[in-house]
Image (tube, rainbow, N blue to C red; front, top):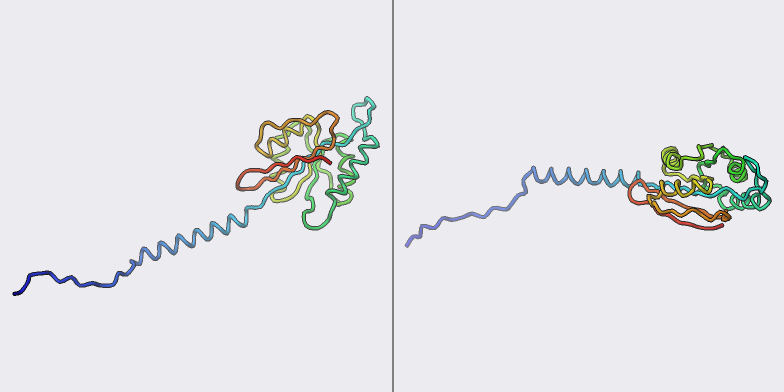
Length: 188
């Protein structure tokens, strides 16, 4: 008895060429994307400090007191190391107390002081991120501008200002190109 069954012949499954080429292209593009992310994913570190203690003399632009000069020297010892982790720029306002706070550090690192407008914290934060992307920047600010600068850098709106007599507050803001900023508040 002959059966009228159809004989199916099994052949090995070969991946179509278009599927192989498409997978290889996608893998190559993904590898390029990963290399690009790795190469551009550096962070900008911005250190925001308040100017040091000022003289109690009622002048328009007071100088630093003896305690303020000591604090400026301490700041120079803290951030004045040459080599890896060295500061790339120092921003100050156009007041004497701000310039004198950063002067020992600038002298130690042989950096010029970049004078910035003292009342627009957002613009100063954008300028520091734009001009020193991937670097390390120190900003010597005032009591009323510190929260605005830190808020613009970190994306956190509720930054409380330091006490009027607290000159030792340091904000360290790490701003990655991809992701969210990290904020650290210290005292020195």
